[in-house]
Image (cartoon, rainbow, N blue to C red; front, side):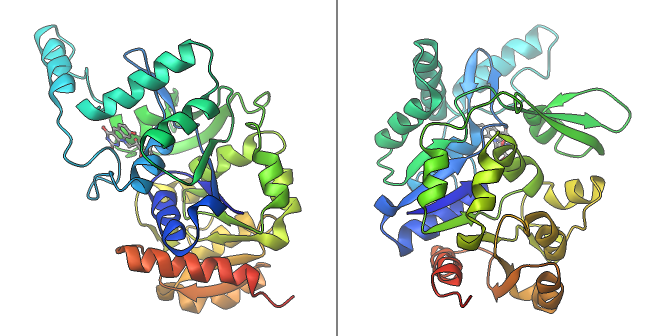
Length: 318
Ligand code: FO1
């Protein structure tokens, strides 16, 4: 099995590349759930849905989240209630009409006592996704953002409502002390031929996965079989706030900074060609470095990146 630790958009594209290059039946992904939220009574799991819709070929390619050819009548109707009743912010999180079906299904099943990992499998089956998708935990795990100047935000309040345009003083993962790894996750890491740390945000996507007790140790034990792909290219995150979060929390926002975070977890770091000059510093940080095109602007580039990434482990000279 090739087992991927996954956040949202970058991981979804990486998994699409892996599914094009390898048999999807040999692929599994352990997915972040600390971005999850409950809005309007609905259980929303953005990273799980982004990965599912992308692997199904149903994602909106421009936004990178939500469904293509989506309509927005329900959320517009909700916003009209807010406008009419003095709450212009109501409906700040855009839920598409078709996407709502997923949240209604997940919410109903969770309310019936079915674990998120089982519901995730059911949603994947409806979309014809052959890759095994597993939330890192069935228990509550939630990123809390502490802005400079005080207060607390949920992850989606920070990311969507505040357009991740605030200075962050600290981040914590509520529930991480007691969350249990979802069934099968630790075993998958122990037996995987290759573990891939997707080009996701190291702090708020991979960070919560590793914060679940037992997960960091399981990845460290698989270090010789693990390869990470840098989400930082030319000092910038391709999407989202990873570069600013790294800097705010005292890490270098570069492929070298990523290497320093991942050196105990992965033997190899894949970095982009624009960062080729950083390869010696990545190696000095303790990781073998592979340089290739990592910006997955086409399915072909994603598949080529997937092949190079997996081969960096299967053909590694030790
Ligand atoms: N991202 C936005 O920037 N604005 C939105 O209104 C928004 C809605 C949304 C609804 C469902 C879903 O699955 C994802 C959605 N996202 C939205 C993306 C989401 O906030 C991010 O992809 C992740 O949480 C970060 O990985």
